[in-house]
Length: 173
Length: 196
Image (cartoon, rainbow over the protein chains, first blue to last red):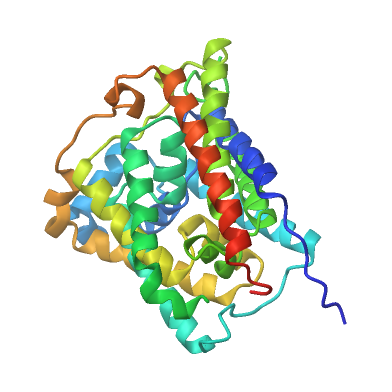
């Protein structure tokens, strides 16, 4: 059986490549990369389809409409995130890492890991809306264009994660 | 010349097609760098694997320098490039909530799609959580609208705020990043983990 661990790319080379992808995004579209924006588009699209009347009154939908015209799914970040899924899959296929599994520390059960992933996702989803973007859109892309807000959000994300790391150490180490 | 879509050099549909290709590059590089593994990502917070810090800051600096040089060569008009606006209160509180989500869930939105694309079920559940979180924000929008819009500072650049030119700030950031990389390499030696 194959037990050999597949190797990852050198992180500094990976960083330069990611930087070039981010540069390409800015050169093509005038904006950086993102992830949570695609989820926002999907939610706006779903809500306006399911409850059109109620969604008209929503400040959240109104705010989205002010910056996006037309179909909420026909936006840059939605197409970009579809690409992310394809790109991630291709990389995993080439590296032999395609496998259905719950990844967790041996000290916790799969069930606990799933529960924590759900809670973490809810928090991250909420925070990304309040912070106008996640690690990709606000922190990374914001830093590349020297946005003050991008630097502040980056420091808040990593600062908080470091501050809380001790309390959640058993889930990871 | 650039940004291509803002200057209408390419059509809207071409722009969306390029978004898809750029996304493929984004997902591919994230996965190749190991960002599809929550235990590898979380390593940065415990010192045993600082791949997040190395990739993140190398990428930010590469893109930042690229934009500054492209601007210098006249290839891109930086006035047309979107600079994220700064709403001080929500930038900090949103960041704090995201930081908690990161250490609890082990992913961020981009990396969770990457993890799910190679079959990580925990990443898929994290994505489910993201949708719930965004929906909660949308449903209760009126409750936190005040906080969301508070302390709007416009779209300042950090270099302007510090009274530096972009170039000088970029140099300082590179020195800071190199210092962090040095600490990261030291930490990986100090807190090694064979398998995770």
